[in-house]
Image 1: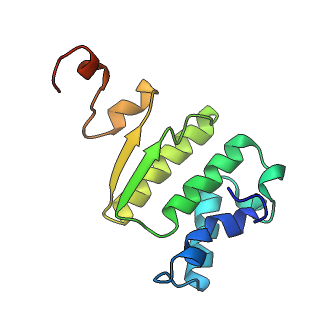
Image 2 (image 1 turned 90 degrees about the vertical axis):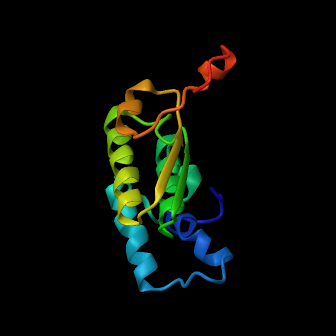
Length: 132
């Protein structure tokens, strides 16, 4: 998160740095919809220092999803979230992946999330010399 930008500006940051992306009313509406889906729609005008760590994490997730990527890479996306937010974010990741026909690759230590994924690779197997 860039401290000098509001949460809304942080979400829309990919549009500022990628000339191929058009920052228009659709992008703004998408950012707001994602923020609402994450439960932080009322915090879009706040700066990072006025947000909790979990709120900042949800802003980063919105930023990752706002451009509707074809590949979503998630590294402990739900790690610092309360149980309700964790469930909400996990559902959002799957919804957005399906809507964009995207692949979702997640790294997590949270074994409760594993049943939601089509394929799971446990890297502990590699340490033990057992191929996946």
